[in-house]
Length: 415
Length: 91
Image (cartoon, rainbow over the protein chains, first blue to last red):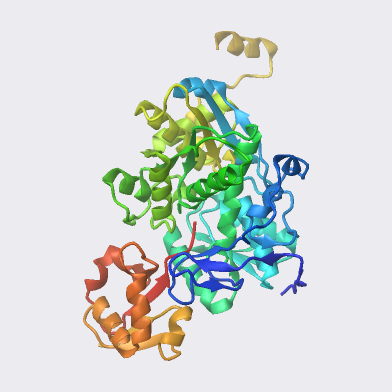
């Protein structure tokens, strides 16, 4: 096993229990040792916060907002993650019947082409700061690739556990980085349960289990980037995919912190959630007016969102309701169509989760959830080449011609 | 009937230092109740963690989420294994 030297410059912050308010020194645990409630980072009150100008002078990565990330001292790993493009998509705005639309394009996130780079960048620094020597995760695919890539760069051994039926491209992209990939005969929820039990047994830093308080904070940087890239103003609506519910609830927190810090003025955006109808426990709870999530057994091609028992489902529900947003569940055929709509109107090729997000935006528009003056951001979280089979060439009528100019011209002129 | 109840590492100190308890019971609930009676400090935390709105732990019967099998009133038979696992994970 590789032995990693402790790098003292990264110091994770203490944690507080959201249930019983007990404060804990930095530890590798997502749950309070006293009451099993969820732990969250504690940020030092009165810490110096940067101005817009100071932030602008920093390198273009998620760490330009480091005062809102759970560390004292500078990060030492994954320094280039974040600050992905915010791409305006006027043709998609026309389809949605709103004033403006932007794509928060995490399909080009560094280094692994999904927004999971953000949370793993935070978790890897926490792992090193806590002296952990192996990292791991339970994953629906994108997290596996991110953990494998970030661990490779940090020189940490990695185990990634995934459902056996995961898309081949995601398994390949995890294994190529040298991570040990373990395919489990079960659903993501089985994998997740196993990882909780493994955290107890092996003392690994499992990024979305015992490093979760540090991991989740990385998602907030999406909100900071959207605000800064819009010139420190806020959109009126944001559409986010929901798997475990963490991204949407962290968007809520992040936009709140942007406003509290005086970086941007205006109201927090209305937050809209997107799930596949084959795995929509959060949407169903919202529609039923419930505050509790009833778990489901996933059945959708959107495997990256196939979490039947979402750990942050209740928080996501609360964020949606508090912000005045809503949510939609979309069918597999609709999400496939929406991958093409997104690509054809914005130039962004997304994996199935992006199809879910775009299809949900179209459904929400059809249901009158957006106003003509709305400025909407779609969080597109991972690259389409990770799930190429979802939009295989069979879906298109692709002509073939001989190499003779006349044949090619015939095809072009009859198109 | 001998049923094994696995509890999270964090709660072992409230349950005699043991993570595994072999108890009698006809349902998931009865088996867990036996452990909570034997170890009241564990019991207090388990009850708190499963109150509506908390749901900090998930109960599994032979590695299946008990909610899919009929909940805590699901019958158990000798050799069954119940696991109490933190629900604050994943995503």
